[in-house]
Length: 198
Image (cartoon, one colour):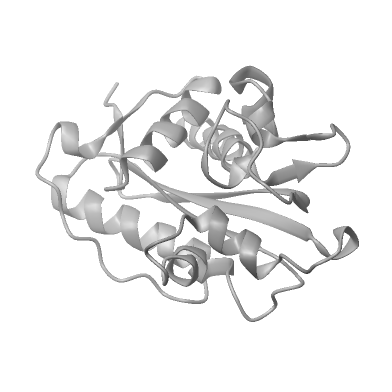
């Protein structure tokens, strides 16, 4: 069976997605382990799904291998004009601060009942026949007031699940992955890939 390759130049996102896919029994590798790095097309500002499909089809057409790509973001009702599909671009404007620091500053005066948030992932897979399969995953929670937890990084450190009284980063992988937006998208994608293969 031909191995799936992950269409990303972000090493940390690739490692995270590899873990999520592996949790649900699909092995994938970083595409740059086998091919030269490519420059992906610019992303749109209005659709996670379109961005994921664009990356996957672009790389698959170049390397003629099955590819999985991801586009993710965080949506916060208290910040209706920011984040979402443009999350990374919005938070990277100040290069001297981490994304979490920037986000916590934006919410520094926001009370707990206004700190609701949703993380969303769309995954797109392009198989050897050129078929495109997409899947979505999301998780709802609150933005904490500071980084907490060491089991994972990024937004997981500030994404608080009220029902568990923990941030995602306080939960070990074996319990965390099925709760995350990317883990849920991976589970949904793999179901669809297996269905296509039947």
